[in-house]
Length: 486
Image 1 (cartoon, rainbow, N blue to C red):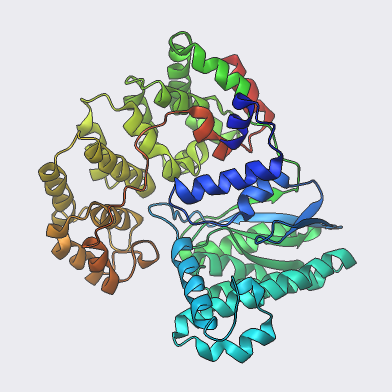
Image 2: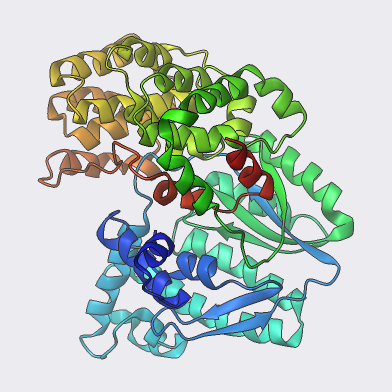
């Protein structure tokens, strides 16, 4: 969005200023108290380089990333984690609490100001064992980053890989943001000779790992890590060979022109949705890079095109592997908002049918739950109706044990502050149906239910395709071509 505003307003901001604006938008408007690393990597990345960044001062240095006979491999756990805010806000609050304790004797602004030796000699000031663990991870991780930078400058990839492994262990044991799926992927990678290093990447609690793997080991890596992960978790991981780069250009101008001629292009956009659903099997088998349907979804949502609602519903009835391929992370990141934006005011039962159908992919049903909640917020569903429906899902045993769907349902109930449903939520917790990484522990969810803060975490509408799609801006050139054809 900062790029869009910069172009429209002719502000002539440099990339670093736009990075700072993007972080501010996350902090103040999205409710995510994130740092600046992701935005900086997107805005300031450079091919064949790592970025050594001081997040406090924004001083940075490009460090050569010489992989030689190795490749970067991204492994996706395919465990969704986007039903609610990640634990980022909570971890950051814990670190800020640690700074308060340490400042009884020190004068620091953040944990990054501490050396390992300073922390060890003052850690007794932190009375809470959990907060102390969080602080220890940050301090030791900063030290690892400094050492890792030296390793890259020296071309010492082996020691760099060992630091990756140490980082994951610390994220697992001290910061506690990994989870069974990420740990399994990493531990399976560690077993293989030819894996230089492996660790989680991103916010944790699902998502992806990044590994440095010798090129000759790549086929074995995919086979052994994939099989070990599937046997342990029942999930199928996806593997991607990644490269560093300067990034790809989001086709703003093409989309901006499309926004001006909504009536003219709407029929073709609707057809692209039909095409993707009707040809999902072929697109999947061919590993097609077809992308027009994605642009179409966002544009039709921006246009409030009610004919798109039933077509979007059709995506949720596709087989699991086709949904994963056609929608990817958009299923849990944006799809509920797309549904709300195109809701026709008449087809609520179609959405409820998705939610109730236990034969469907549970992530599709979870996305429908989020859309149903948004429609409640927007006045399409009464409180009595939504409570009655949620209770029927539990009473009719439509919630499988330990399922993503059960967690989505509980997350929605907590989010809506339906205190009259506390007994039902307790029942699901008691029967271990709930992922506590997402919804919090049993002893904390009731406090959340009675909190004065009204969480409305998902925005209900797509208002600007450019703004909302730039999150998916790492598109192939074919995506731009598909958009231009519309």
